[in-house]
Image 1 (tube, rainbow, N blue to C red):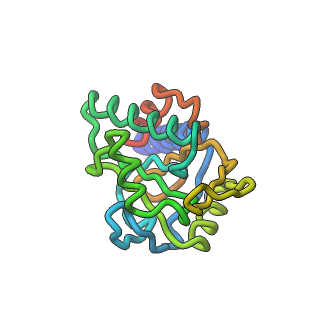
Image 2 (image 1 turned 180 degrees about the vertical axis):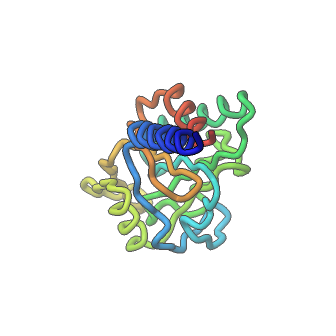
Image 3 (image 1 turned 30 degrees about the vertical axis):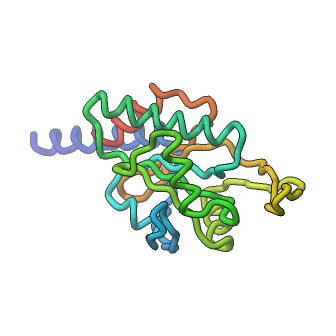
Length: 198
């Protein structure tokens, strides 16, 4: 009788694991390499150590983006608001700039203030070019600078073509799913977060 119960429990576990794997198609450990970034307060932080033990929504942006990045940030803001309305207040939101030449910590702070982002659950990061480029490769994100000009004050002006993506990372630092960020389905991502929390 005990053997039958044990076999049943094992079978249920396999079904659960299989269904989770199908629901979350990715299984990439992002914790193997730690890199130093500056956050919006100019404080050095280690990523992904800063998201340890937290379910995290992560995106890569640049603050001079005219369309997709502001839309992405707003969609993440709405996700945070919806989660809070449902009593979930422990999800981390991370934005990493792939335009470190212009996106200083001060610029990131202003970017957040305009969008009413609270740093209670959010963190915005910038860093050295080589570190950013390594991270882009790890997350398979493309960011290509267009032709550059200068404004009247001699500041560089350019746009960047980039991958349209938000990534869901579980509390163990495993990348589980990617979403098209400009058309993010809030219901889907909230249900996915709830599934990870169960």
